[in-house]
Image 1 (cartoon, rainbow, N blue to C red):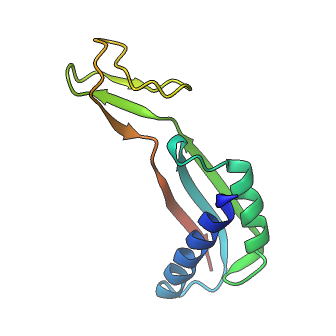
Image 2: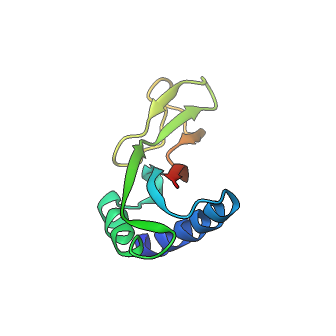
Image 3: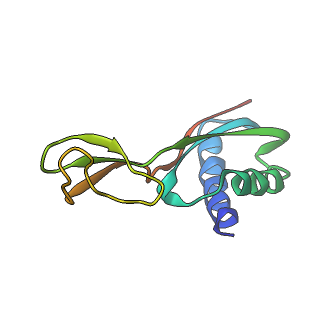
Length: 115
């Protein structure tokens, strides 16, 4: 379960940022998670529920997760499209195989709130 390791890293970042901004307790965190990270939102929620028991979190801290689909842009015709579940990176417009991934790799903290 790589989600626990991911969440531990995110907690480290959040702890550092909370110190920088004189935040004693974090009450809310919002993550953006791209489909290509293969991080499961339920597993991230579970990992957070374990780690929020420790400072700088309040025991009731809330984790919100925004999932982002995988999107590509064709290098040949510039069409933007959602990449299907089977991860076929083929342009539906022209059939081109040269595709840039423009969304879906995100794993970032959007914001956090606290006192």
